[in-house]
Amino acid sequence: MIGITWDLMSWINCNFFSFLKSNSRSLNLSYISFSRKKKMFISLWEFFYGHFFRFWMKWLLRQMTGKCELQRIFDTYVGAQRTHRIENSLTYSKNKVLQKATLVVQSEVDKCVEDIMKEKNINPEKDASFKICMKACLLQISGYKQLYLDVESVRKRPYDSDNLQHEKLLLKLWNLLMPTKKLKARISKQWADIGFQGDDPKTDFRGMGILGLINLVYFSENYTSEAHQILSRSNHPKLGYSYAIVGINLTEMAYSLLKSEALKFHLYNFVPGIPTMEHFHQFYCYLVYEFDKFWFEEKPESIMYFNMYREKFHEKIKGLLLDCNVSLTLKI
Image (cartoon, rainbow, N blue to C red):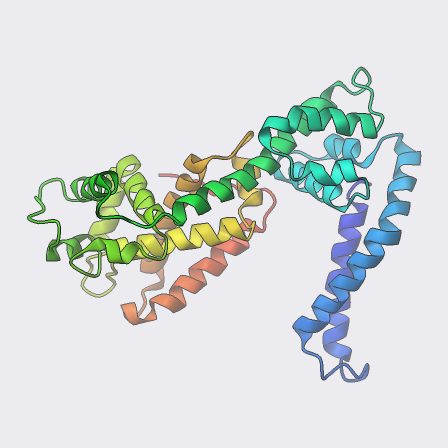
C-alpha cells in the first residue's frame, strides 16, 4: 500500500493529460499550449496533494500499519526506489526537521538520523534497521549534491597553459593515445590526430574547462585498448569524427545529466554509499563507449549531422535513466 499515492499520481497524470489533449476545444482551452496545461495541472495537483490528500493518506496508512511513511518505505523498497521515495517523503513533509534532512551535509548525517528518529518517535529497539537504512539514504542524497558541487568546481576551472599540472595532463593524454608517435611541439597540427580542432588544444576546453581534459585522460588511462580502438574508428573515411572534441562534448552531456538530477537512479543503484568523482568519470566512460557504438550503428551521412545524432543519443540515455532499476556501467 505504500506505493498507492505515487501510483495514483502517475495514473491521474497520464489520464488527465490524455483527456486534456482530446478535449481542449470543448473545454475552451485550445488557446493554451499542451505543455502549459501540463504545468498548470502539475501545480494544481501538487498543491492539493501536498496540502490535503497526502496528509490523510499518510494518517490512514499509519493507523493500518502502525508505522510512519519512512518505515513503510524501508519495509517495501530497496535500491534507488528506496532512496528516491525517502527523498520525496522528506521533501514534501511539513515537519521542518524532516525537510532539512535533504540538505544535510555528510558530517552531520548521524545527528540528522537521530533527530528524525526523535521526531517520528521511532524506538531503535523495535526497529533496529531504521537507523542504518536512513543513514545510507541520507549519505546518497547528500553525496549526490556534493558530487555536483565537486564536478561544477572542476568544470569552472579553465585550462591554463601556464599551469604545469595542466600541461603535463595534456601531454599525458597524447602519450596514452599515441604511444609510438612523439609530439614534435606543444603548438602543433599533430593535435588533430587525436581529434582536436586547432594547433593548441586549450581553446577546445573552454566550455568544460579542465574537466573535459580530465575525463579524456581518465578514459584513455583506465580503458586504454578501448580508447585506441575508438580513436582508430574515429578516423573512418566516411563515418569519422573528431575524437577529442566529441569526448569533450560527452563531458558536457554527463555534466548536464548530473545537474538536472537525471543521474540519481543510476548513482543510487550503482553506489551504495557516497558517490564520488570516480563514479562520474565511470559514467563518462560509459557514454564514450556507447556513443561510438551508436554512431556506427546509425551510420550518419556525414559529420554535419552530428548535433542531430548527438541529441538522439542524449534522448536514448535520458530514457534509460528513467528506469528506477538502471545502472549504466561500461561492460567490456
